[in-house]
Amino acid sequence: MNVRPSILIIQNNKILLLKYNYSGQEVFALPGGSPEGDETMERALIRELHEELMLSISVDKLVFAGEVVLPDKKNSTLHCVFTGEVISGIPVVNAAETSALGFQWVDEKLLDSLNLYPNIGRHIQTLIKNGPSNENVYLGKIPQQWF
Image (cartoon, rainbow, N blue to C red; front, side, top):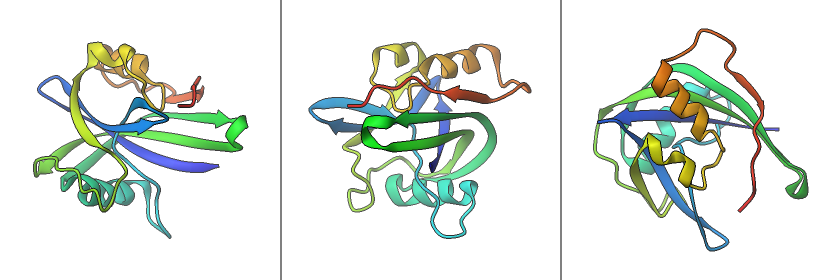
């Protein structure tokens, strides 16, 4: 199973998402990436956002963990979503470090209308509405279509 930390950054009531094109479909994802070597998830997020978006960030709290299992692709990923903030920088996509076509600040109300990977839009909306929970952050298997 792969592990992919990602970060939920909210500024001015908008969420930072990366835009991709898979099989002709626009797909959005929270910024993040896989740890390298003995890297922690926090360290991987700091590195990935610096490499891919030229941002310095702080990583706060783990708010969601859930699995995407794609039997057709013989692939499964544990997604770990943290909250965080931009310390410095303005997002600029570094094409040498990511396959993302761009980024977008998206209103949380629009998450349901996007192809989001992983498919956690309603969980993000609940988090924004109710604030972080001290309860179980494990979402279990996340229902996900592949693009």
